[in-house]
Length: 75
Image 1 (cartoon, helix red, strand yellow):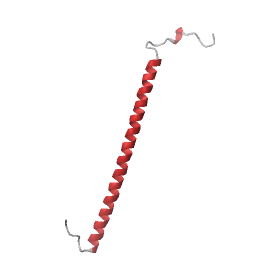
Image 2 (cartoon, helix red, strand yellow; image 1 turned 135 degrees about the vertical axis):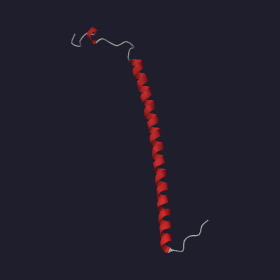
Image 3 (tube, one colour; image 1 turned 90 degrees about the horizontal axis):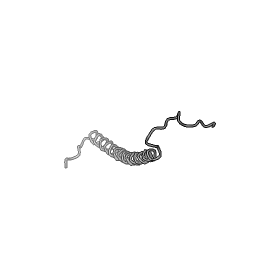
């Protein structure tokens, strides 16, 4: 390991850099946790969308309806 500088200004700069590095590492960890949480939410939403799409396909008839063939609601 290298020796710490005897110069107080250099020591102060080194301490400042180490402090900033520690904060940056904490920020990266927090951002990574946020990304993981958002990916889990996205996966859940995509699964719900697939289920809704399947339910719509199950309910909707395969052939398109012609509205002219249907009786109007006032009859």
